[in-house]
Image (tube, rainbow, N blue to C red; front, side, top):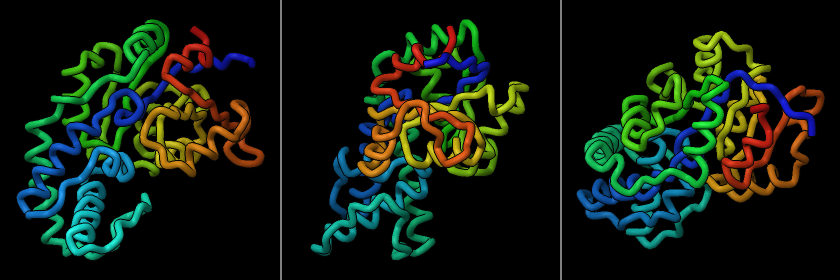
Length: 252
């Protein structure tokens, strides 16, 4: 395979660089406990993560309410069903934020190979994070885990006023780095990340170890590493079993 020269490498955070589900689950369960609702499991949180905190809280509430009433839980990764009143959801989001701020980096861990990959790539390339997490949490997390020295920027949805799959955050980082999208690689673990890369006309490295749903995981692993994301597209899709695989995809 011909190696690609990427000047800028962008990373998703949760499910790509770090496994934050244990701390997210703690915060969600403290919020649910305040409302006398059943607790979420780490497995269930992995299935609903990725589209921002409000979506995460809404989905957790819907599942807990269904469980409390004896209804079957919808395994879909789609949005909440709209059954949560806005004021109720607003209050739950505030509760979650309070608890997560206090438990931001208690059990969160870096995935295997992340430090080595960031250290290696940052010697010759510009690296940054593009996450749907609020920017202040993302930056605090990267600081606490020792990732920040390798990253030029860490941006969250609130920093650009848009949430992936909107490509605005990817375009913003390209603009800051003065690097075109064709010289940029986005690395992520979800359908949302994949769609953002596609909309940004950017090559994408899909990490199979993260939080992807089974359909997205199956689709990605069935595609050839150098196949395009859509017919006629110059984009390339790479599949990484661990982040260390990235070192064989980019020219060091």
